[in-house]
Length: 127
Length: 236
Image (cartoon, rainbow over all chains, first blue to last red; front, side, top):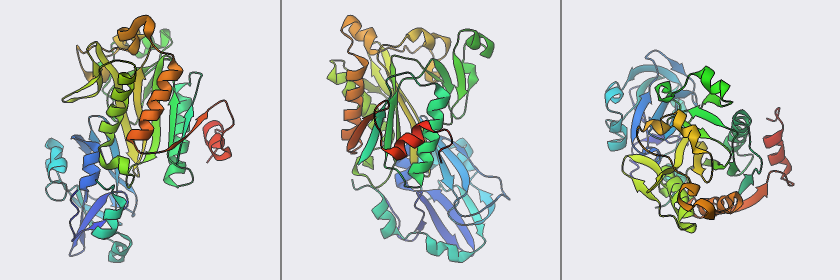
């Protein structure tokens, strides 16, 4: 199970990469593997505002649907429109082309509440 | 430690859904352990989260006239139906650090169904691209679940000896031309009792999902917290 070292993680299996006030959010390799082949993604609207922990998106596979939560508070400034036609990008490249949305962060200090890779690893089952 | 609760009498769909929602909130808040419900529903047809009702072959009025309830469920998966004689397994469990969760939950549910079939001498198998548990006579187990804060609810239905004619009023799981079967289709008068099959489903759940079960019957004494969540509509 891949867990990149340079990202932040939420207990609900989202990852965050943070650069110049903007958080790119996706779901982890563990999350995608539990859901199997994704067939549909319901993304937020650009301009939507979330508090940390708000339901922000839904990812759905043939037999499963899972809510995705905003790891930190902010305004959605971009969504990954490629997922509309190719939700499998999340399965194939969860930490890259499978990103879900970008948030303009309200408060960078909220990143402190997220987990680092080693702490997140402990939340995932051992193979 | 996890709990399981088996209901001997059919549970109306909405009542089952409300129980699941209360257990879900309690599990998310960590006030109860993982909890598995094993029950049978009164006749009902349910649509999945994306709700494609073109797989319904009758109008809502016609279903009503037949005494069949119709609900939109928030689970994944497509249209299916439930009726007495079919076990429904609703594990309200947090997926994550548990060792049994290193496989995908979908595969675990399929494996529970396949091993249960094997216990009674039925060879079940997976089919690529068509989830669930299949036999030479058709699909016996259907799966659809939802994760909220990584606690799963809804789950799997497993046909033991339910009236399959209900499935003829829908396109099950949106798979056209694919037959649905039950254990009875394959075993006829050698079909085991519901209780035996229920025992097997719980036993395989426990092994495959790696959760040791404290097993309860709904009509016998329950831990007070669990009884409150199951039976008190106003429980938080």
